[in-house]
Length: 302
Length: 302
Picture 1 (cartoon, rainbow over the protein chains, first blue to last red):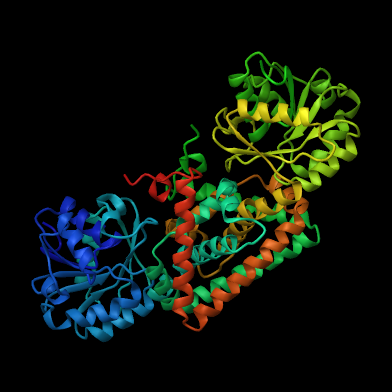
Picture 2: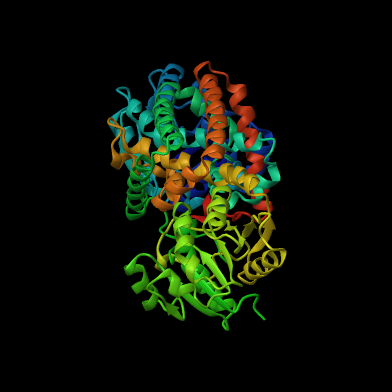
């Protein structure tokens, strides 16, 4: 029997629509309701038949739910929680999918006093956005990190864990602040750097935009993928996880300055030592199934 | 008829062994000789049957050649050229595959006075190294940039162009210094940044190495691929293209500082504007066939 019988998904973009599709596939008996603040997305959700019912208001979507999943940008989670507060059944569990967890846990607790809240973060996604971009297998074999707070009932944590396992994810429990530091380095800093270099390359004068695109196979194209991710989602991630991101960024800048100095002074050993060390990290990621072993990301070499 | 009849490949790693395999496939009548400074690589090249003859010295490999391709790290090109000078036939054309071209053109000219030299850079590769890592289709549909100097005979430039087209590449002519600035941004800076962030992530204390690997799907894993590239090759690239790399790195650091400031002061508009701009670059790269359209690099979502 599914851990929840009536699931409401608020926010039907890449993640929300993938949750809906995965629930339909893994737990077909679940009654699924959905809502999105954008009327065009609601229309698309109906056309794509993502839910049993697409409600015009967040309140109407949650009124019967025993699990509510907030799949909105982290900057909008507090407001989304406030919008459902009045219609939320007393026994409902509320969770989310936000990429930062400390600030999210605080805004959820503030907006929903006395409610069973289990903040969560499925570490999965693509560079695409919107209800058409989602797919049911997005969470298969990926990690979903739950960051319960002192206010999270253990029974609710167990049911949310079971829910994510049913969607194919592996569940891990973590302290919210530790989550925010881990993801600052494994996800937030990489996105910030990718956005930056793509911007830097676009702004050059003597090297044209068309040259940058034409010769991007030299490495640049790898960065453009995550730099194509959703602008609103990522703006909110950086603003909501500011402290951890700024700390990681500071460490990165120091390390980059050291390499800059090594290049300026022709210190090849420093470069060679680092480049040899970093090789091993890739090997571990492939060995532990966190990326495909196929060289060059399995790009087609016709 | 092939543009050259007797081709010598000096250096049989990823690129050299791919050139040999591609020549075998595209121009089977060509007599192919090879050499590598590493005896183990020579043994592997014989086992893999990469060439008609694997010579024990660079001189012996080039003695009959009408085209010599130096496929060694750019820091070793001057020495490799000097080693073949005495045995090089008068009518032979010498080219290379180095990722930086200004310094390479100068060291080739110094080591081989009066020789027909056509510096070249096939913009292709993977994160793997060594003779086993090469494959014949590596250059299919990729750009090969020739950077002829005043000393390069037009007829030699035309034959080297024809040679690369036979291997499936599209050929472009470029001024050496402009090449070095274009590749500094499309290839060298991306590699430097990827090496740096992988190093930064490995050196954290409170976030463990195993956590970094476990949650790398959040974006970090993308950077580990190019950070697994050959350490010696890349050390040499940064040292040989120092000016252009340092200039691009300076621009990147300024842009990163601006984003750092925007995050610190909660300036979401600056972040959102950049993140929206960078999206378009990815679109152009996919539209122009410089990367697969498949989301998430076509990674398997089982």
